[in-house]
Amino acid sequence: MIEHCFGLFDGSVCAGVCSFGDGSGNINNNSLGEYKMNELNRLIVSEGLPKNTSSWFVARCLEMLPSPRVLISYADSDFGHVGYIYQATNWIYTGESEGRRIYMKDGKEYHRKSVYDMLGKHDLADAERAGFVYHKGKPKHRYFMFLGNRREKREMASLLPYPVLPYPKGETTRYEASQEITTQGMLL
Image (tube, rainbow, N blue to C red):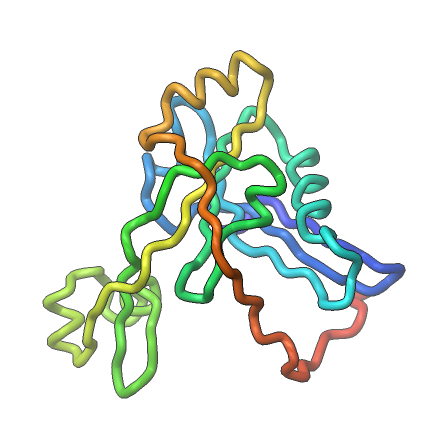
């Protein structure tokens, strides 16, 4: 569920979206101690904008979120991402997550939530009986951000269940964005 969503506008044209909400994982039931946790679940910025627009936009979004709050986000190595936007905005790197479950059926990939919606449970044996083939995807790079005053940030850091590690480096790949899409006009 999305709790906070921000738009980046170039005049009247929406040039980017950043949303925060419930995490896709189950780390501490979306909390860290007493602190509410959200995941930065979507970030997209149009091509052709000035350099560093993405990190500038994320930084502005962080300023507008209520605090205290713990944020988590992932850079998907399946798509060649390292997390340079998180590094540029001073998130804390805590290593890689476990590889996500990937379910395949008839040559099509399904997210575990879609399989749950179809079967009513996450049981691997039931998924296999229904014709799904399971394999583990690449791990994702995991980043945390703490919003709050100094005392709150120190306390959140002390509750972090992972070690703080140096930022990963490497080549990053951009999403294929050349596909022509139809956009919705202004709603009144």
